[in-house]
Image (cartoon, rainbow, N blue to C red; front, side, top):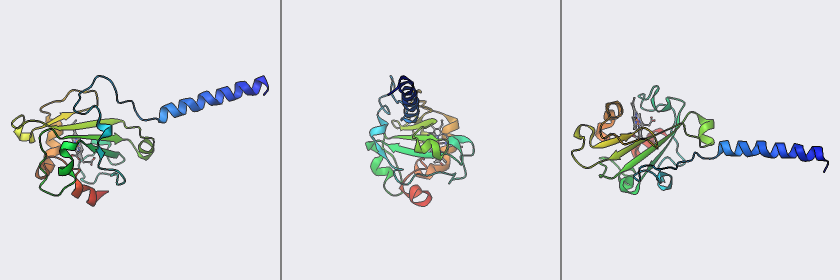
Length: 173
Ligand code: HEC
């Protein structure tokens, strides 16, 4: 190889390295809450039936709106309930994580822009919100009460404040 083409292939290699780095999954690491730190190992209930659009007509600008794609993960504590049938009453210790993607391209690249979490706390923590705690990001702190989150999720009060369950996925994916 002539020196020139060695330089060229060196440049091409480093460019493709950057592309690979950008497209890889986000780095969920750091000193975060053990209740959701390893959520990527949980059951992804949206597997092969990803929901997009705004099936409830509620999200408007929240949760990336109509164009957003979603993945929802649940830990073992809440798995049987979310995959079951109504009435949906989640046991304390249930954690549900929702990854949000701006659009199909971001979804395919698995590059979420946002992450929201619900944690079912002990009884009587926040009875008005069925004892759910709310987290607005992987590295954020849990809030035992958040009127913004619970206000909208109260629309799903009949299903214990959780929209995405087996019935919902059957209907909307
Ligand atoms: C304006 C209404 C609205 C607000 C505000 C809202 N959500 Fe949601 N959320 C929804 C809807 C609707 C879904 C169902 C899936 C979808 O359409 O994206 C959802 C889904 C979720 C899910 C997956 C489980 C489920 O219920 O389907 C989590 C976790 C979640 N939201 C957490 C939060 C947190 C934390 C906040 C506050 C920072 C919040 N949400 C604020 C409407 C809202």
